[in-house]
Image (cartoon, rainbow, N blue to C red; front, side, top):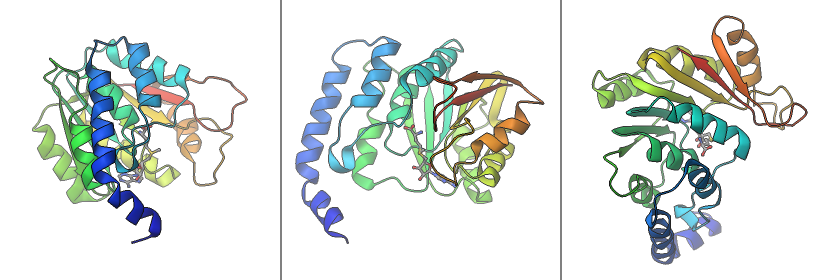
Length: 228
Ligand SMILES: C[S@@+](CC[C@H](N)C(=O)[O-])C[C@H]1O[C@@H](n2cnc3c(N)ncnc32)[C@H](O)[C@@H]1O
């Protein structure tokens, strides 16, 4: 265990206390979508209980509005990370959000599962594993129990092979009229491994798409949606 991990582990009780206190503040009033997005971006850093998202506000708000217009029951997300986008989806889905990642830190899970606002019937299900593994796809299918999702957010493996595989593997779970969204579609990217734009250039030629891009000259970010 690294020194950083040891320090975080020792601070788990304090961070749990402050993170759940912060959650109660978030739950204290009903929130507009704009407020919910702001909470997702600024919930706070509490070691393993940190909730945040690396998104452009205008882009994620535009996506959240598109998702809200579907009156979603069920949402599937690949790429939980620090739970920022999960916070938003859990405020919109009326039945379930399934959020997948290679890793979910054990202490973090209870906080993420408690995200749906008071009065909501939404349940958060965290599935840990590699989205590209056939047995993982079977777990997703079992979790959905035959129900199609209204919205699929693909924000996991950003290599062109990875994002293509996630699209090909999971689009069958989206209902007709639903939406599939991808993050980091702009061509200029800070990392060589962010290759979603290469996938996006291909897919936008053969599907019904829309782009949410804050600034055409920006480096990184950009959200693309495919209407199923
Ligand atoms: C950009 S982050 C997701 C951010 C999050 N959606 C948000 O904005 O709040 C990408 C996440 O995808 C996960 N990931 C990468 N490859 C994956 C794979 N093959 N299967 C599942 N998760 C994966 C990483 O562990 C990471 O936490």
